[in-house]
Length: 113
Image (cartoon, rainbow, N blue to C red; front, side, top):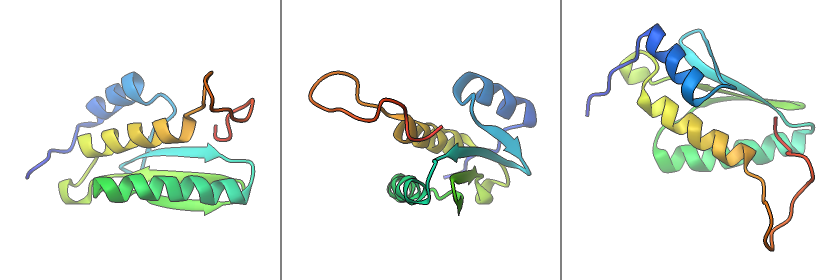
């Protein structure tokens, strides 16, 4: 399967429309999650690792206290592709999910920003 890398203009448009908390740095789409603790950094990194492994597309992760930096590019295509955007959207969904109503409860404020 061949997948094409997006142009800089296409990447900028996709980020504006789909991933407003992400940016482009050094040929990658990037998001830094403020976690507030090293324990939460590890928790989020493991959740991202699960999603990435299931998708067979793996980000670079930089774990520090108190944040997690996620960097995505498609090396085989030589740039940013739809694979990166789809995985970034899934990561965003997992990292920012909050229970609303129903039997599930959670913290009053999101853990990850």
